[in-house]
Image (cartoon, rainbow, N blue to C red; front, top):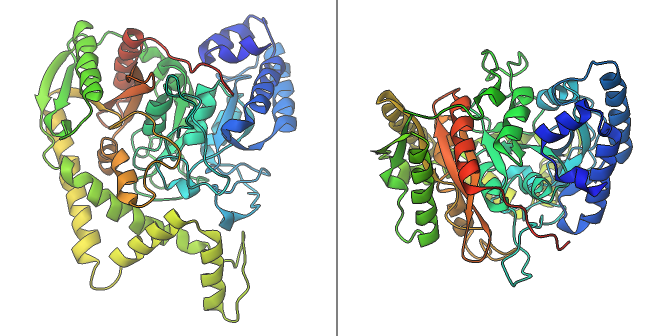
Length: 491
């Protein structure tokens, strides 16, 4: 039955429609794979009974010809999405054994369309991290290894559990969130496809907040087509989220295989960083050549404020985190550490409940919002953000359809290798991705090659607002040219 786990969502949909196998068989195969891969620490909660019950219900609907677009497809859910009656912790001790009495909009739409939940996936605590090492459940392990080495590698973050589980064939696709690269960076580290939709395309309702003006939900999948199938179910207007945009959701899958002839692809000169590894530069050049061969036109573009994106992001994101995380006080839900006064209760609960990285960001955020520093830091960062957005607008006004860049400055690194003494070293992993969140644009990371040690590398495409379809068409071109990679099984 294990070969059932190696199919794509598109293949599984066809198999279920032809009655080659049932959703229950598909679900059982994935549950067995999860059980055998616990050493990867991708799942923080397995829900086998619920998964089988959902699969049986879907099989009954399929038998009546009532299956939805995702009928019977087993998925993993990042532990940032509230799932009704199923523990949701954001991988933080402070939420303890919190069980939401409601369902996030994105997951409710997946269940509406017939998907099956296998369990909750590991992530960096409150999505704060670039390696999935800050989770209170411990680090996630990347199923990829350097050739000839058994060093444990990170899968990227914060959606490391999602990327690791999809790459290791533990689920057919996964929900993820992206605040500064948390979908695209882990996708690049694991040879999966990650899509960060336009801000407002997917509802944020029921997703644990990190930085509300930057957070966006999206899918991680094995192929561009699978990501397009998942995106259609995840996207849509939600009156419960005031930042959700009321626009029709296109059939993203229809964009797969569409001609890219005549599209102008921007190559930003500011992304050529000093000391950039030769293999990243080579991959970027190769990706541009593949798009050119498919009929796209390459043009050099300038995004002059790119160098300010990372420092501005690390002011805006912690500021919003400081505000959002103030609700975790030990009074209403989650962990409570008693104190002699209300102030002591707050302090003790937060000291015990938040990990180092979350405390660091909350303190930075509180500082930049404080009287006397607000104008010097937060207000200035927001002005820089406007300039970054305008850089992209100027590019698109010149007829550029999408921008091609590297997804990460390197391949996956070892657990514990970065950020120990200097947190900024870890923050630099987001250098190619944060601009997209600051400008609210859509981005996709597609596997495009391997480094000298056999580790996957990805390319990023940045699109116009609400033009994810063009990204899917271009992403498919890169995918076809590069081929698909699966990690050799060692776990």
